[in-house]
Amino acid sequence: MGDPKKQRRKYESPRHPWRQDQIEAELKLIGEYGLRNKRELWRCHTLLSRIRGIARSLLGKSGEEKLRLEKEFLQSLTRRGILPENATIDHVLDLNIKDILERRLQTLTYRRGLARTIHQARQLISHGHIKIGSNRVYSPSYLVSKIQEQNIRLDTKLEATVKRPE
Image 1 (cartoon, rainbow, N blue to C red):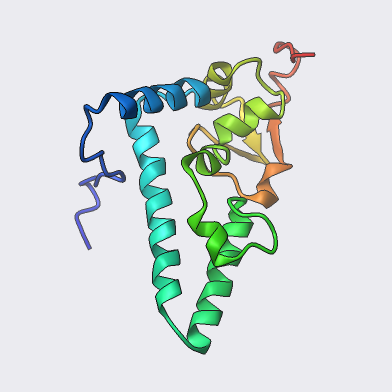
Image 2 (image 1 turned 180 degrees about the horizontal axis):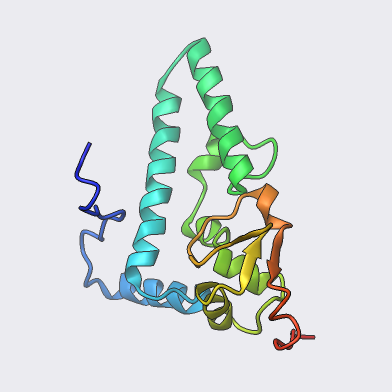
């Protein structure tokens, strides 16, 4: 175990950060999903690469243990909302960064119509105006599970002041 006071990086930066096509693709995603900086995008890339790495290692195994681990892994991704029901391990390898970014609280708040823009969704979350169930969530990058998705709501004290889009 490490020192609890020392935070570790939760992302891997790109090997070639100055490639023009990569910069343009990153900036497009940052604008589309209202990310604060590239580190948020890289964190999602790292999460995706870890998920795909687990899937590749499961493909290499054989026997009953493979079936059990594969079933558990697919169920966990389905619960998180990253994969649809009845997905296979091949679907995990087909995942892309947008599948992860679509599960963020900021994106779901905007898609459900609780905010006019993706940037307003980020502001509402960071100011504590969005609740999941009875809990306030202050992190726009919070990954929402399928079960929690229907419980995303605007705080009742704020509903009267925020005009919803029509």
